[in-house]
Length: 317
Image (cartoon, rainbow, N blue to C red; front, side, top):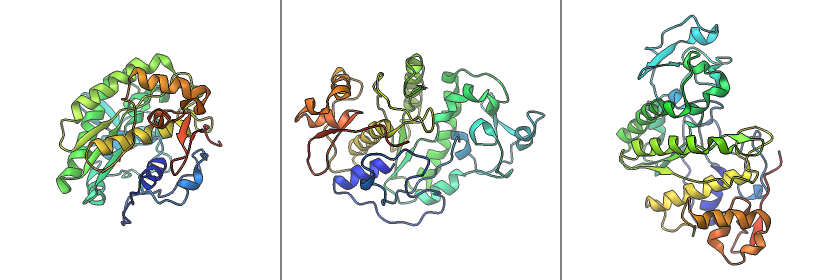
């Protein structure tokens, strides 16, 4: 969100100061890479609820009353499981549903999120990325039951819908943007074998949830042969990936009518966008005056105040 805030400021928009109860981060975390344009966002306050390793169901329920203890993996079982559709899903929300440092009643309720969101222009959701990646945590959040990544979509849709409807019950005009999930990583690049399944997951989530009023989906693409993932926190995007996501989120805000002006960009998922990625990988200067192509690229950016197309790195990690 910090890069998105910097882009909004560059376009002349100002985020209003407002008091929130839930956000636990307002400025860049020390866990994130330090990007080359850090001076543009380091002092900006961008409130967000950042819960490391959490999944969508950690933000979908106002209580744990329906959680039932289970004889499974010690403390995980003690925190209990609830039934979401036909699946047993942990009532703990951390990565691998490890309850260390959490109380039995730890959660972020949709009612509390809705109170904070009341009257806001936009809420950006990326709290569901881990839903389909439970194979990397031995399916502990699903009580050890293997669920194909694509088959986690109904859990995601049920959880996000509960949160979105809670927000809109209090604030019907607030626009909710759902960030698309991204593929798994192979070292610092995209793991190509996960592209099709992640595309199908995104397609199903988008189809199900954009039926909700004032709800939009933010699609984006990473180049397949460039470093877009971190070395510091494997599987998480670096400064290049972050820029791609922020750019398309800004585009979605413009398309939703939230912004009076946006960025010129090639259409997402087209050959034109792929050509921009390819050219930018070797020579940002070769993009010349093609502002749209430079702004869409992962490895390039437009210098501030109408400058030239310049390269960006993965960030100091």
